[in-house]
Length: 397
Ligand SMILES: [Fe+2]
Image 1 (cartoon, helix red, strand yellow):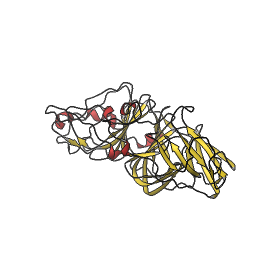
Image 2 (cartoon, rainbow, N blue to C red):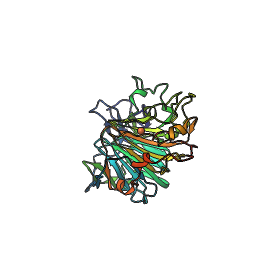
Image 3 (tube, protein in one colour):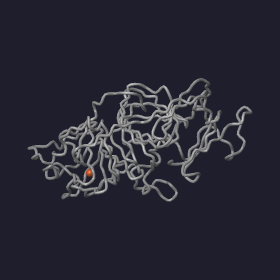
Image 4 (tube, rainbow, N blue to C red):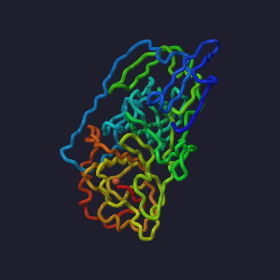
């Protein structure tokens, strides 16, 4: 999506004869918005329609939790037990019709290929590294990376070491915020990242293997299995604007100001009716009279989910690595009692966090119920502590 790329061999023009060793290759146009959106063109050794066997269709089932009370919530997810692989181990935490947010701590690796046929994905890699092998080539990743995978991309995780992922899936498109781009698509001066921070697939490795290959495709609310008799990564070349890529949260350049900058300054991606933001270590507001933590706010049309990645969250009891806070719509929220006074003069934060704001209400899952600590809603009622630790103020509460 970010800019034109080409890997491997492609013919001189689109839609002309292209052979390898005398054999006519199969051209596939893979694109969005009915041939008017971004697209890539891939050249296959085999037809991408070639299916040897239809496997099972498995509906995706979720257990919804409808709490008895409407309240701010805090979930502690760090000790969630590993299960499944990088796909089957995704456990939905909250969702609406625009986005699904899942945790994944796989205990095994994929012995199949996967394609999301009905949604774009952003996988935030909290812990772990490895390679996302894709039909467009290898996409190396490491902790702190957002791995952006457009719908229709066939892929397989090849992890190195234990993994901890926060996964966003949307039936819409994951995009670089429109206000970061000019009319030609180039990322503007003043945006918090640039094209150099975006990492498309490295070299294309064309697979020429016959055998039995299972491809699981998420579609129509379930997963359909297909069996191919040829490796799905049989592409000898491709070009275009549609491909997977990574962006590291550590390459996000924080925007700071003399007085407090609002959450949109942290925006990293846009989706339909939601945004994904990155809160990174930075200097805080530098006006002598600045209050360097957020004002109380009522985002009347938004739900705010924050996942705490690393840093010092000592200013808020119960916030630790892997904690999630959910501030639902209809309620104001803000710093703990007394914290604004205590924070005056603090000049930096070491926090690292990922936030997803949605315009529509989020439903909660049984995993949210099981990890909810049940105490957060009343935390504003606590009297201020005598000497809160301000070494790393969590700047967005
Ligand atoms: Fe907030």
